[in-house]
Image (tube, rainbow, N blue to C red; front, side):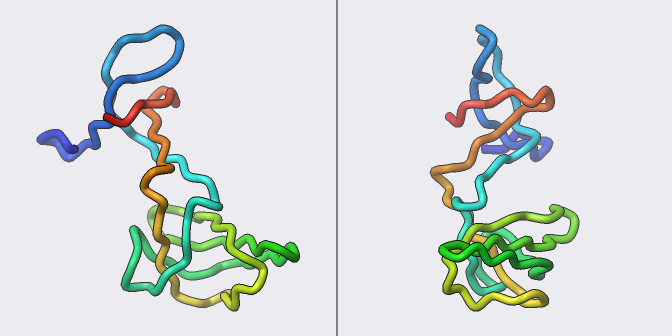
Length: 108
């Protein structure tokens, strides 16, 4: 949900015994909670900058422009290469939000 300024309302702030409400200013997501999809799909898109083959997994660094570099962990058989245009699909049930102070904000 967004407020009239377009800020994402995430809910009650957790930790340190606080009982205040807060707006999310940052999104945190683990590399394994992102899938590579076609550039027209997903939550954002970018260009593969680096791939690091680790056997069972490949870490893929995607340049998403203003969003910055996002690291994705995919299976070791993926054929993604540097320079490929890709979409990133986030697992929406695994999206932690943080407020301006870096504290976790519970989703409501």
